[in-house]
Amino acid sequence: MSDKNRTSLTYPSVLAGAVAAATATVLSTRLGLVGTVIGAVVASVVSTLVSTVFVRWLERAHGRVTAARDDGPRPWQRLAVGVLAVTLVAMAFHTGIGLLTSDLPQDAFSTRLLAQLGVG
Image (cartoon, rainbow, N blue to C red; front, side, top):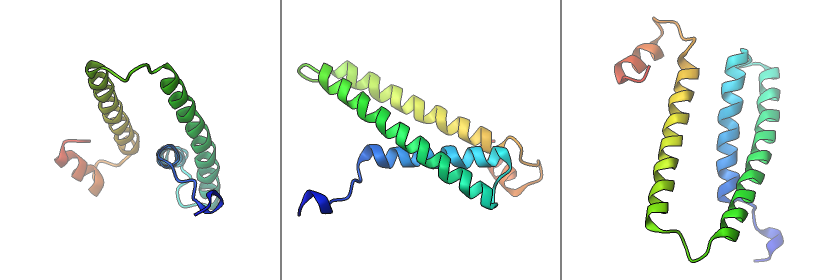
């Protein structure tokens, strides 16, 4: 299979697409653009911009890490990176839930469900 026919699907592009979609969704929700044509346009533009910037950032970070790496990470470095990654994902999830549920009416089904789950 030639390189021309291969897709450019990589981990950084998939991760950047997910971050971009989440960012566009939260932004459109906060601006009250959900379900409108303008909301779709804004979401598309934000997704494209965030995805491109995030992919470039991840590729630059990967390049710096591989250039600085000598004989591999030490065990304590792996543990520190793992703990940091889990902490950042948990903080992002908590912030996202907080942003999405901050304006929900108290009698809404989703508010009651989140309260029963102990999230909201």
